[in-house]
Length: 165
Image 1 (cartoon, helix red, strand yellow):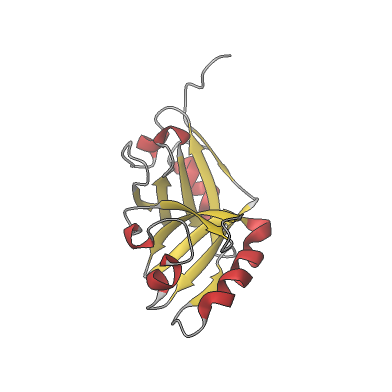
Image 2 (tube, rainbow, N blue to C red):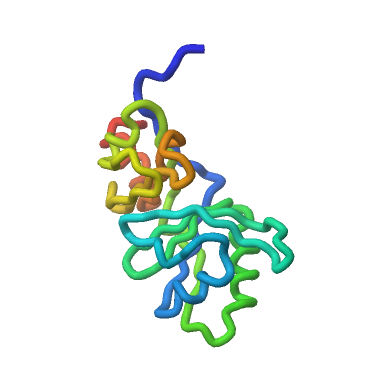
């Protein structure tokens, strides 16, 4: 099998974005997802899971901060279920949950020099502005490439401008 010689990128139509906004967003998610939400920022993405109280896996997603909101990038067909389950825990927390899939397209960028094409260091979870949105190195393993949350109408143009589409 030959290796790819150039970075590549594609829009992941099956992925979506859920926005968690409000002053209690970090505190709200901190106790109900599997990672330390306090470490998420506009410069640091994390991977997390939502589990039942018994520890059964329900959802997995990437988290990154943008403009005072936490963006959860996950399986698009199941985001409504995640939103519904999170809403059950909301109680008096000052948070809002909304589908941001109409605003963002999710892209994967991979291959040699993919991180450099997005202006990212080779460090899991590193995030930076990109193409009118943001890009982040896969927080699980840098070798898996990067994800980008891009303005829906300009996603392909941003990938082409970076030389990855």
